[in-house]
Image (tube, rainbow, N blue to C red):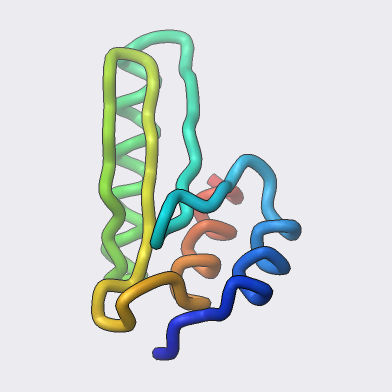
Length: 91
């Protein structure tokens, strides 16, 4: 899988809600009512990323969750990152 150009990344980001460029990755932040809701979301995402075999950096502080994706083998952002971002948004 090939790393996307900055123009390709910006085009892909324009088709998503809430995702942004974070150095060599794409990132999105969520805020939930409480820790329990945040944990339910993390578990749903966990099942989805296992199916994709593409795992994010996950950060959680109480009711806040941040997911960060890049494709390590490509050295940056690829279509694989945007495909999973779209699937997560459908959750």
